[in-house]
Figure (tube, protein in one colour):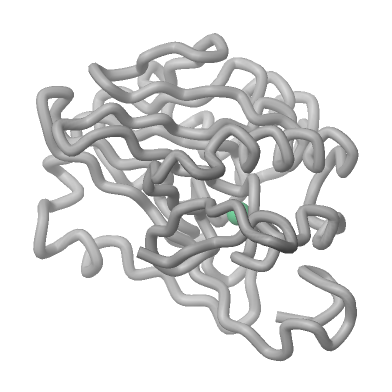
Length: 225
Ligand SMILES: [Zn+2]
């Protein structure tokens, strides 16, 4: 990762960035949130995608009933075309925005492969029991957070609302990745405030592991779980 993109130059040093997926198994069936880059891994220098191996202890990709896409960036949707799930959910806003970007070959190929299986939903819709796709715009139009109400309580997958634990304390860092930086900053502050002190376990696409948002003396902080 080049420095100066996620933080003021030199602040974070050289870091590795993960692209997480979230596997949910419960009354709603087997649900995969995001799919990593899949065959599009070459879009990032040095990136590798290992979805099938990562899921192997839990399920085969053929067992996935539904896929939920937080937004339509290659590192989130790239693996979706290889998953034969009956339904692939995305917000209608994200899908509409992606269509207006238009001629991107990867997206056209994705829409073609998902023909008849892509389900475009309104903001806040419960896509399967206990799993809600809530728009959190800015990173991309229609970018969404996934709220999960499971047997072990509430969890939130923040997707690309934050890209690094440092953004919890410094939400103003890291503007270059967002299509609409002002909206993304409002969204980021809003979600961090909402989650602060609740103890709700949170995950984000490009942060390793779960954490909670904790109030502290010099602003909010990420506490790894
Ligand atoms: Zn991302």
